[in-house]
Length: 211
Image 1: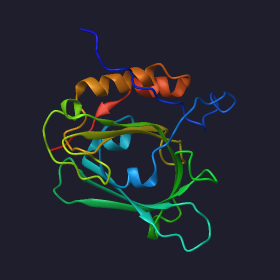
Image 2: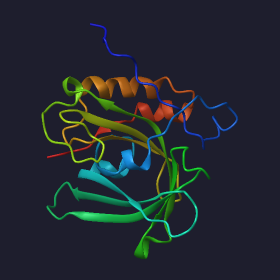
Image 3: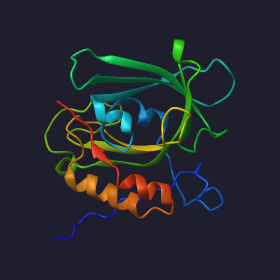
């Protein structure tokens, strides 16, 4: 039966060779305040998450002492391996790539011994979901911007680095995810991207283990 909901629209990445020369569609990125809080990585095309479970990312705006109006984000990743109860963490800082901090593009750099590591990521799409589409359960959200009973989603693109291939993550405020229908609509949007690399990644998306 056809869905009564409008299709999800995702922009192509701005940094890949196949889209750099193309005019980007109109896109309004989420504010740092909307991104703030904890997100659960429910689906991904990044191979490193195949051996991990309960992956979450928490963004926290950082006060910037400089006169620049940009907002940096503290970036805390938590996860467990498939065979261990120990929670591991990766800490970093996200700096807006755009001068006006309004492009939905971020440059990540690790903290501590990971300071030598860096990567680039972009928001391809985001949105709020009403209660009846919030997910497969009725768990409470953990994010700053989530309304009562609803859910929120984000699709992010991670550029290739020396250590990791390019990839895509799907975030949900709720650990149980956004529901099968929304996931399929996201995959459909990725599969229809103007970027050939994104089309390939759409076919590689898998569900991240959560318990």
